[in-house]
Length: 197
Image 1 (tube, rainbow, N blue to C red):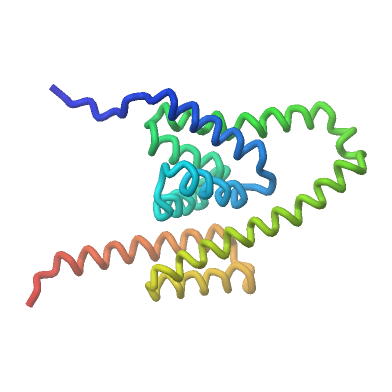
Image 2: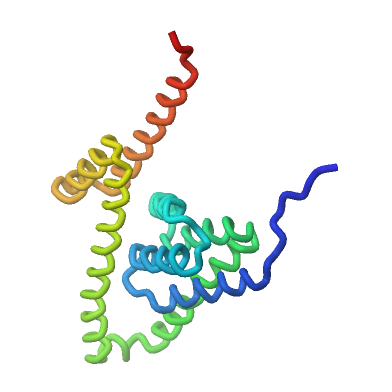
């Protein structure tokens, strides 16, 4: 008889997951980096659902996978907490606010485009978004420096130079980092298999 390894469905946790992702998505302007920062505070510090290291892994996977970062992160978070049902609930909570908001904006698009108050509000929000993205970058850099692994630190500096100064496409940078990571894993495994002299 095969064992059932599925997690039992916890309705309270699913409700909390949905409301958490819905509120984060509804109150976040500025794209994936902003929601990842807020998700880290909510999921790691307030709820205690994940460790910070695990949240950083989810962030890295979400950023390097195709599709919107918040949706990618919510799929992984939901699956980690409650399996496939958790993924569906988390994604639902993440995509509902923008769907509702964009549907309203589409209906009243001409009015939004010509409204001076809306234009001013969006301009002011850009400043706040820039600050939150700076916060995310600083926290991620601190975590990389905290590993004290020279390869990670050099890779961070090199990719910054490639992206910012040399205008190399983010796709090539991500693929290069992926190849470097795979190569490191292969070399470490070979070293472990090698018999000691």
